[in-house]
Image 1 (spheres, rainbow, N blue to C red):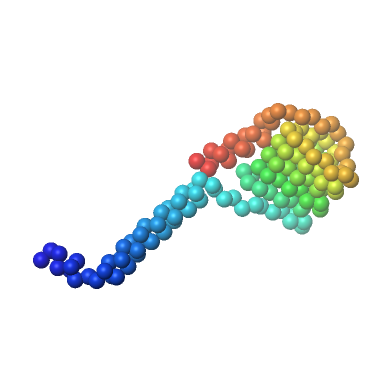
Image 2 (tube, rainbow, N blue to C red):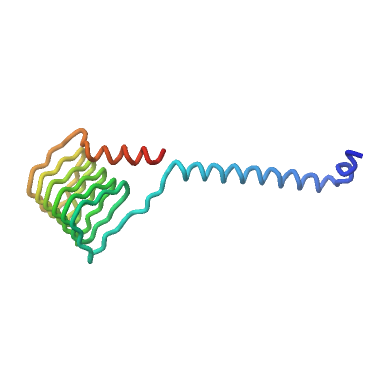
Length: 162
């Protein structure tokens, strides 16, 4: 008959099968949510330029960049950290900029922080700025509500996440 298999199951076996089905359903929902979150938040690992690297040219990244070496040219990054051993000769643009090293040229950033070991020779354009004691600065500091090159990086990253 149709129900012969069902009638032969013991109550404990029925409970186990129901619990197993529920656990599988819950775990598959969690996996699906995790996959959806991973797709929405694209993880870009930070890039690092070591002390022994010297670059001449233009660097553009929609992610994070940490520089310990020497760069002659333009740098555009979403988040940029210029370490104490770094020397930049050229313009720097970033949403979030931390300067601990030396820059000779203009600085454009939404959020700019000068560390105690920073040495900057050039004009700085920013929305917010913080300067620690000991930082050396020669140039003008101008506050701007919107910076086109910096905001383009943020727009590009938002578009690539979709």
